[in-house]
Image (cartoon, rainbow, N blue to C red; front, top):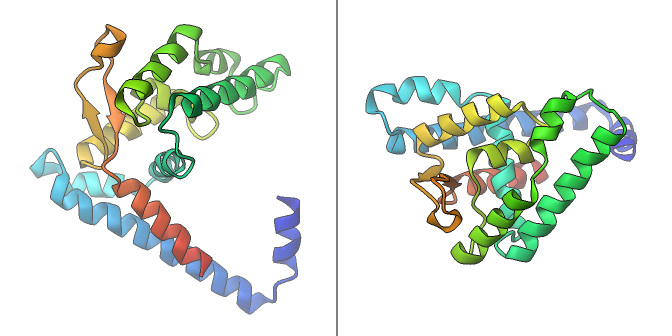
Length: 200
């Protein structure tokens, strides 16, 4: 991060302004793509406009980037999901051990750790389905450093209502009524287009 700031300091003011304009335009187009899709897919037709307005929140972008990274890093294998969860657990446990509660309280961090049984079910689900799918609370745990658990679940519910995420009724593989979240690629494509626009 420090290196990036140094590079920015070396740019003349017009280039900084041009870069900021590109970022703001890309963000605007990102939201426009989501709103346009919502107009077609919103589950409650009377709430299309209200749902579109709610999309203008940074948590929506965080969740979209999460699904983009799952695809970009090819987290469609049991090994990839296991590595993802183990890395996440190490990060959270390190914060607890260091008593670093600036982002989340101890209790919130402890709830973000995947227990062995949870990890087993996630890995098994990916093995059976051939793609990365999680329950809402699992996505919330993985995004602990971006938003609270309640905010994550609320944003996921919004994206499901908007038709930008799909919630499967249950996961019989785990022997429970574990509802799973997946995408049809719209969020990942919107993030990819955003990155392309700010990279040019």
